[in-house]
Image (spheres, helix red, strand yellow):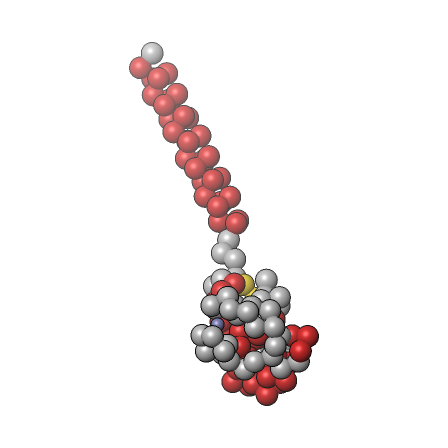
Length: 119
Ligand SMILES: [Zn+2]
Ligand SMILES: [Zn+2]
């Protein structure tokens, strides 16, 4: 009787450890998700811990490396913001800075476009 219950306990313990190990494996399989994106001007690729960080990195790169190109795109009437992404003021025309809050709309434009290239 004594021996029987001990071996039963042992096998129970093993099963528990095994299922725990399986769960750990399952969680590990999910893995960390890195966000990746590219600069749509020069196709350089960037990766970061999450989507926001990746967008931040690429926008920073574009403002430094391709400011003139972004400016040209942002200044096209079809690319004008209807509303300022920062303060929500009506804009409707291409501006370099929001007339209401002074936000850099060239950078905001880059951010908007880059978010389509990050996944
Ligand atoms: Zn680039
Ligand atoms: Zn604004």
